[in-house]
Length: 464
Ligand code: NAD
Image (tube, rainbow, N blue to C red):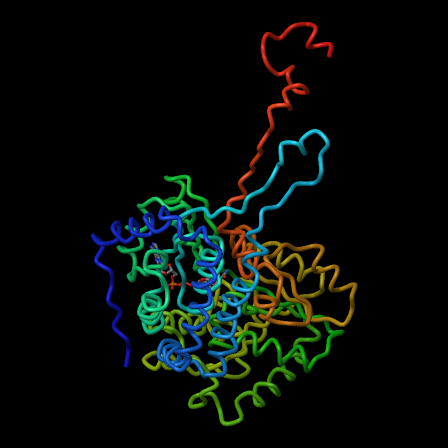
C-alpha cells in the first residue's frame, strides 16, 4: 500500500530553520566529539532499522533487498562511518607551505562549518543520496535541513521519523513536501544549498540561491553514454552494461543511458547482451523480484511513450504495465540520434544501441551533446581508452566498469556543466560544507620588518 507522506505546514518552515540557526549559534557543533556522536547515531539509525529501510525501499521502488543493501544502504552507512573515522583528520587546521616572509604570523587554514545548510534529495537512491551530504555537513560542523523527495514517501517518512529519534533536533531536521514547501525553503537564507535531481529544477534552485548569493552544489543527470570497442571482453561488457542499466529499473543517474557501437559490431554485442539477459532473468521479467519498479505511474507513462515512439528495433523486453509501474528491461537496436529514445534522459530500464561508423564518430556524438555525468568505455585497448578519455568531458570517465565509481573510496562524485557542479562522498562531502578560513596572528615585532607599510610614505621608505 502506498505511504501517505505528511507534508510540513508551509508556515512552520521558517521556525524550523530558525531552530537550526540557534542550534548552530549554540556552538555545540564546533565540538568534534559532538559531531562524532551524531555521525555514529547516523550509522546506528540504519543498522538498528535495517529491515524497515529495506521495506521502505521495496514500497517506493520495488527493490529487492540485495539491491537495497548494495546500492543504497551499504553506501549510506559507509559514508557516515567514513566521516566518523576521519573527522578529526579532516577538521584539523592546515598550515600553508613554509614562507620565510610570513611564518612569524602563524598562517593557518581553519576548517570551519559554513553554518545552516539545506539538502534537497531525489527519489531514486533516497537513502544514500541523503546520507552522503548529511554525513559531510555534520562532520564539518553544520546544522542540516533535509528536504527528501515526495516521490519516495516511505523512505522520506522513515528518514524523518528516525532522524528525530537518533539525531539532535537542533542540528538535523526534515521538511516534507513538494513544490510549495520547497519553494518556501528556497525563499529563506541558507549558508549552502545542495540539490540532487533534474536540471530543470536545478535552474530554479540556482536562481533562488543567487538572490541570497548562497553557494550551491548541484548533482544532476543527463544521458550517460557507453562506448563499446570491438576489442573488448564481450561477456564482461554485456553483463556490466545490462546490470548498470537495469539496476533500480534504470533510475540511476550514472546508468549507461545509451550505447555507441561500431555498426559492424552491433549484432555481436546484442547477441552477448541477450545471452546475459536470459541469465539475469531465467524465469522472465514480469514476476521476478530482481526487477525494480518505476517510482510512479507518471514516470512509467513517460518512459512507455518514448518506447512507443521509437523507430529502433526492440530486441528483447518491451512489455509495460503502467498501473503496476512496470517496464520490462528492454534492449533496442538500430537507434538513431534523433530517435524518441534519444530526446531525454530515459531514467528507465530501456537500453538504446546506437550504431556509428567509427570510434571518432562516437566521440563526435558525445561531444555534440551536454557533458554527461558519467562516460563509459569498454575496450581492451589502452589507446582507445585514452582517446575517449582525452577527447571528451564528463563528471566521471570509467573504463570496463559501471556505476561503482560512485562508491569507490576516495573518488569525488559530481558532474560538469549541465550534469552538475561540485562533488560529494567521503572527504568531498566534508569539503563541500566547509569554509577554508584563513587566519594570521602577527607579533608586534613584525613591524620592525614591515614598518614601511605605515604612512608617511617617504622617499627613504621607498628606497629601503
Ligand atoms: P525528484 O522528482 O525526487 O525531485 C528532486 C527534488 O527536487 C525533490 O526533493 C523535489 O521535491 C524537488 N523539486 C521538484 N520540483 C521542484 C520545484 N519546482 N522547485 C523546487 N524543488 C523541486 O527527482 P528528479 O529530479 O526526477 O530526479 C531524477 C533526476 O536526478 C535525474 O535527472 C537524475 O539523473 C538526477 N540525479 C542525479 C544524481 C547525481 O548525484 N548527480 C543522483 C540522482 C539523481
